[in-house]
Length: 267
Ligand SMILES: [Zn+2]
Image (cartoon, rainbow, N blue to C red; front, side, top):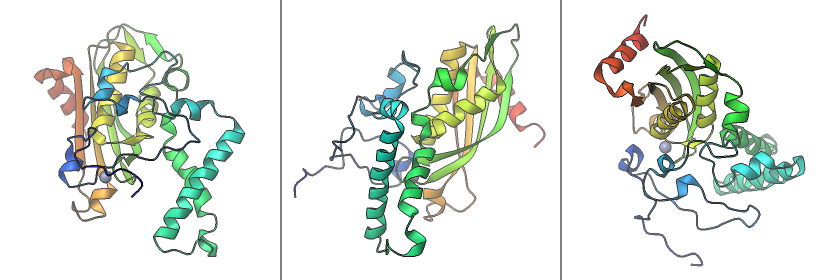
């Protein structure tokens, strides 16, 4: 055995719903020499490390990953190389599941999947200030609750790399600053296009809004279906998982009730 063995109780083990279902935790023991590595907020202890890092870094990235800056800054040639490396790995997967990588239907699959995977994770290279928020924060004397509901999201469960998808509802009470409504959807999209757990996705959207707008409070609710659960029989088909993150005045019972009442109105 060339690599050292990992115990199951490795230091990055998280306590969340997934681990309770016996999902394998894995840690990367092989580092590709082709990609320079940097520290990442998700690779530091303690257990909820991203909350201890700034929401937005100086260059405008929000909780960047190891490869965020390389991906965001690469040339078309470097992008081609990345797609090639990814396609090679996909080819290995096809071989290992016992498929014939030379048969017609699969010939372009590695390349196709590599590109799809980069699309599914493009939120890593999105710059929250330049690409998402831009100049869409306005001074406004509005201080009533703003709610955008039913924002569709498609994300990838970080434990199985299979989709979870559903709807995000975002509410906030402004404090002299409002944000263009379409930006709320863009924000949810950015964090969803990363490897995620639903709890973190809720919290990251809420924390980012809190940080950028300094509102009286923020509420984020996500209802999602996880393919890793429904397709493996862990959960019945059609069931969904609901997570929420309430900050500021939404932690008060009355405000939260108002939000949830408005959210359900007309359904
Ligand atoms: Zn999963």
